[in-house]
Length: 334
Image 1 (cartoon, rainbow, N blue to C red):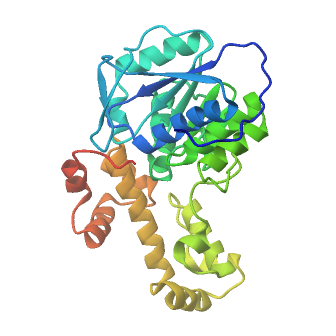
Image 2: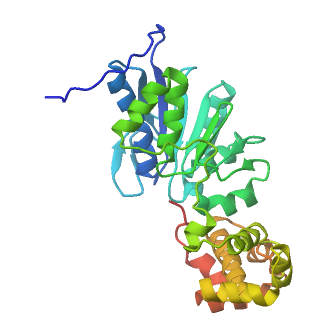
Image 3: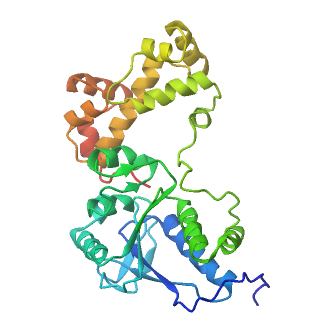
């Protein structure tokens, strides 16, 4: 027996239901997929009729395995779609390998036919690789931002939770699929229905494309000190060409000694050490997520000398950049 529910009145325009084509890449993230699909299902339930339909497709047309190992039976292979379909590519772990030539060519063909195409989680990479985000605004999970920015300089990368730029959609992963789908539901059938879907999902804070995906600096470091936050933000924005502690201190109206004391008190390390850790963290992401040479990784992270980079990397991670690159069977992603 189904519990009673409030039906949201939705205008019947006589149009056929909108259809979403979920492309499940190998090792896709189940969360991004299920959040999007459940939002559509609940929209139908709250409206009391079918507003949305969906189908699951993928390379080979048989099964697709998510990153948790669960297999999903696909409805079909990558065939020709209906003109009004919306394609949502679901990415996950090692999206580079999952973005095969067949997938990329199929996406290019459907895009040429006018399809709306979205990339959930790391699938923003797939869309960019297919050339579908050239000149567009886009987003991707924060862990993949560094490598994406290095490879696709023709894409305007943002840190938004999701981005809708014309007929191209991208999300940052995780629950951001819900935010995107609520935006689409509100656009198609009104805010009342979108809010009803959010209530069913116990989703109390609906985010917009103006919200950023990473926590603010004070939240991440657990310290609410405006000048410290300002300095760390400046460091994060200047990895390739590091700024000296003296310049950082001057820019926030402090002496170098005051800045040193601030970092020691709140972060138990010097500004120089903290900056080095930020640069090495970015270097590690680039080594594991891109095919950039070790020398180019070093340059991108502010190291003029490869030997100095290797020495600092070994001191921090207890291995060399070359061994780090060789030991990775899969690349970091969610």
